[in-house]
Length: 187
Image 1 (cartoon, one colour):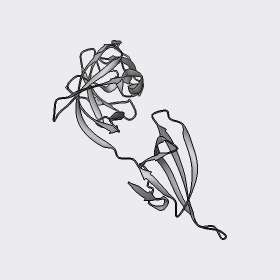
Image 2 (image 1 turned 45 degrees about the vertical axis):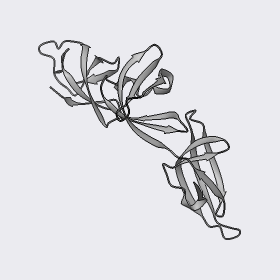
Image 3 (image 1 turned 90 degrees about the horizontal axis):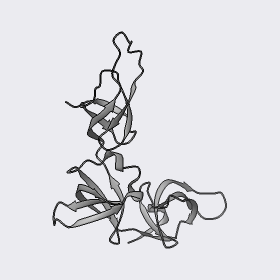
């Protein structure tokens, strides 16, 4: 679908220079001389390359068609993560290198949103928090004060987070997927 440069919004996906770009910032500029234009900061999906581009007001751009599907994470197989579409039960494998940031939050049987462009998955949207089990952490020495400091904990997915001193091995905790920080106990 073609849109004018003035219809570009933050978060839009645009096909430009034979690549897929996510719009990070836009500013509409009307100089004293010459025509108005839109200054857009964009990031290539999935490479992460940034681009600042100026578009004339009468310029048309191709807005990318993105399909968002609810899928269930099943298991890790070799160097990939296997997901199943919850509607038609088709399975899809995404390479581990494409899910570097999200891998520590993926628990079998959890539901995620997978964004697909031209049949190729390009991003995974996680819930805001996930519940994970602590598999290893230091024990608290009696008499230690809880002076706002935490201790490291290893979670079932391999993720490491800092937890309060009262969290023990075997506890289930809630972790923020945006920051990777401990939120609270989930027992």
